[in-house]
Image 1 (spheres, one colour):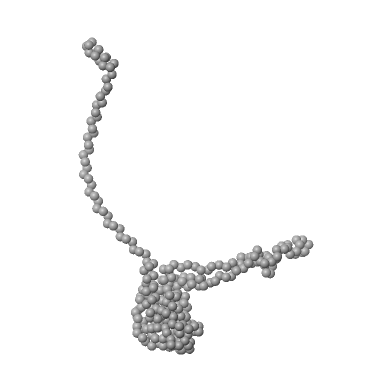
Image 2: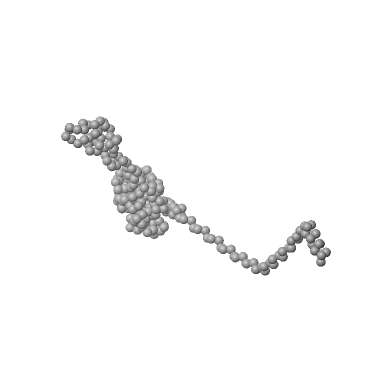
Length: 262
């Protein structure tokens, strides 16, 4: 994506090629909404606080007798029924801040930059510097540039330019590190310095590489199956050894007697 580089007074000063990985992505309106809500939640103070009947600085003495008054039965004047009493279910102060994953924040910022680039609302200037801090001079230059309602993202805050822009109600100047979705979408034009484009591109592409999941290592090739050993012939069962029977003297005498009779 090719864009022209202009000076602060609106004159041409060259051209610049925008990285499509940052300024050419598909605009995700759902992520833009999440990022804006996340930023606005963080800006809420959550200071609303009311006291209950137990926290009211008021006497706990019974206001009148229990009977013979013709009125309802009451104790102290701290309940919410009386003026100046405690508040039931009132706000107690809370933290409205929410969380948003880093990868979602980076993609939402890309979508915000891409939406301005694709709607022809992106202006790239060579530098944001002024010789004087007069607001009137800056307003005249911005009128020529067509950026009277714009967010400036600069690589460095130049004192004269920063001071002159403070009195312009529809102009905001922020450094590259403070680039955010809410300020980009809040105003009609987005003005970037040439060096700020390079810094934003390097930052967002490095965040993409950091949040990308590492590729899984390839599994090692399966080992070749070992050849099966040849079937061996079954071994012959060993012959049982004849156990020698012990001959007792009584048995020896009996066997000799039988031989003589024979």
